[in-house]
Image (cartoon, rainbow over the protein chains, first blue to last red):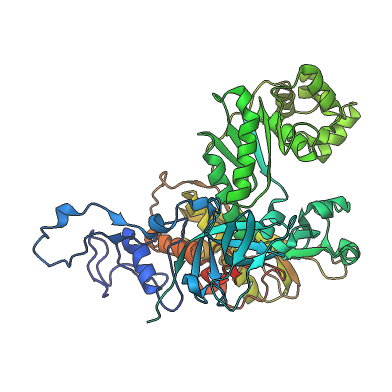
Length: 185
Length: 421
């Protein structure tokens, strides 16, 4: 981006007036585009996803290329902006992100390093993938509640189910509603 | 009128336990900035008689004996958990006053009186499940009474299961209850006032409630007279929807280690200005003056003592970090004396007014950069404080406060999310 020597609203002539008292850096951006540009600039190296507290980046439903000079005939049909938060986060205040480690849930499509979206507002049901607290540790497993018996199942034959005896308490921390896997590029 | 006060139990400790379930049941405390004093205690630690605010070093022996865990305060985490809790609570009433990081008032006018306790229980269950924080609920006819009802719920003096509604209690029951509660539990009655009231023979809530308001007004203050009326069930304090803008904004910290060099002080002052300026912009105000002060450690008697402050007026009100920093550093240079071991520095933005009452000046300084400041604020909100900063703040910051036992920012940093196997 090059700095224009002409201000859009009059202002100083180049070279006129007192010398500026400190160096400035002009960034020319419509204010509303700032978050999107920041998001783009920051995409690699870390994994970045929308935060449930704020919508940072939404995608136009009809993304057409803008041709200079001709207004797009589709412009009148733009109806909405798709927001991943809306898609992934149902209960904002109860939604937490956690990072999966290990390989105990590979059969459910959860790989090492994946991001899990966890909704604490949901009541855990049979076959839900849950974050449970076992012996003070948080673990991700599939909840199995058949025949009055509660078990936590891994989705990897190398791991034994976790059984609960009478009186032993199982705390469900939250229900996993999505897994997010970024493909490296 | 009917109000509720919802308050998180041992809030900071509870926040930590959400992400470290193994800490459930373990005696633990959270320490203030620089790991100095105890600012939150688990129930187990309260049972050991540890008082709020005691310096950590004073209880180190006790801590070793009882295996008390001490954590540095993780305000980033607590603020996020607070927002979540307040979000849930806000769904219960159109009227909500967020009173502090861990408590809020709700206006309950128009709700059926016999449904309030059940609603309190629902609130408790939902906050516990959604956010993981245990709360207590006090319900009564005035804000001062809800504070007391909340105290009763916490201490199990009245109500049940963490919810206490004064509404259904008879006058005699309330009187008997207030007879058993010390007057210092009343909202706004601090240590000094408690002593004063003791001199007047007022030691219980009941005695304060039944005191002559005119006498209280004469001997203490109008504020305490209002408290007396509130204790009698006359609502004098309305909910404040929006916290009034601050008239001054302070930012100060003790250093993690003594600082002697001007360059280090400059970094610290720049950092505090950046923080204060961001707050200033959040409340859409401008400052007309900046105060800077530095001091040595007044408790270290063997070291030479020095303390000095200076107020730097600005030619034009501003919220621009760079201009405020320049003014603060100009002031710092004037008060700095070499040869002292400085322990603390602070800045205060003063004489604030709203952004839209700008007064033009004859000789305007360089134009403010609202768009740049906006970008800085957004970047820092998004990627953590200090992501974008002036070089004047420095990079290494050896003077920065100690937070040696701080837990990760579990909910606000992508690289610090809880790990689950």
